[in-house]
Length: 415
Image 1 (cartoon, rainbow, N blue to C red):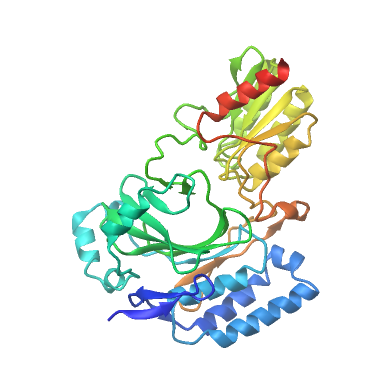
Image 2 (image 1 turned 120 degrees about the vertical axis):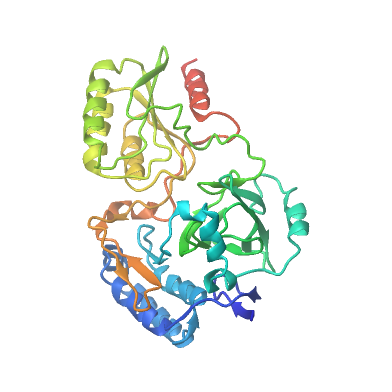
């Protein structure tokens, strides 16, 4: 039987959803409350008045939650508490179901899955999906409402609900048998920052609960693989097939270029050393484009020697970033911007720059439905960029290649 639930504080309206697994949310909240206090970000931020605010919020939520609460409603409340700390590395996540992506492509598996309570009781809207699709299909690329593709297998419709700051995404069609038209993919609530939303989503493969805090939606890109239908060329991201990473290339007589896709310690020490050597011997142009798009970060042991080599070269630096440039890539952007005459271009970075995971420890909640990944590293001197990101000096257009746009800017400055 379908029931009416309210996604508290995320979307303050009610809509018809199917039953979800319930949990003892009082125990879940106490668990998150305890584990949050071990985080580096909590210890450095929640002091004085903020400590009182945190305790008051915990008491407020304790009175709201119950010991037999809808899983989704509980998850929203857990993130209401987590949200008091600025730390995009930390998070509470839903535990994944034990099947693989390959399983979702297997007809025998999906036929069996569609008979489970998990599938039949999944949150669903009661709407005319064809009418919704027709209405959303005419929305412009820059409008958050519209039809989006999740890869090539799923289409979703994002539309506003009763309140102007709240949106939902519903499955319109799917070639993955784990999804059915009408099922709810995610919920969005506008923040006080332009084009930024707090998003509670179901994982695309495992349908586990995920939370994206202060997430930037821009250029028709909702998530990294969720883009507007009709967006035929994506110049915001790097075409990995065309760009070789950690290799210095000459693009013009006075312009050289390097793309670094990651600063992970795994597999990049040799890349770092080879690039530093190449910079020292082959960087001859007056201008260097350092492309950090899609770089999710890593370790300063990888990035710092490269920054030092670039600084020592004395060239003019042009740094490219997008919203997928995060963590150590953001720290690297800031370090490069501290070099005289550096220009930062592209899109604002992710805003996950002040904290990190050294040991990667996670803790499962009492119900087994959630787990928390607390942070154990801090870089508080970057706190002003947390959840905000590093803004470019020059914002590039999504309509043409960003490297080519940068070369044109270099030409104009040299005239």
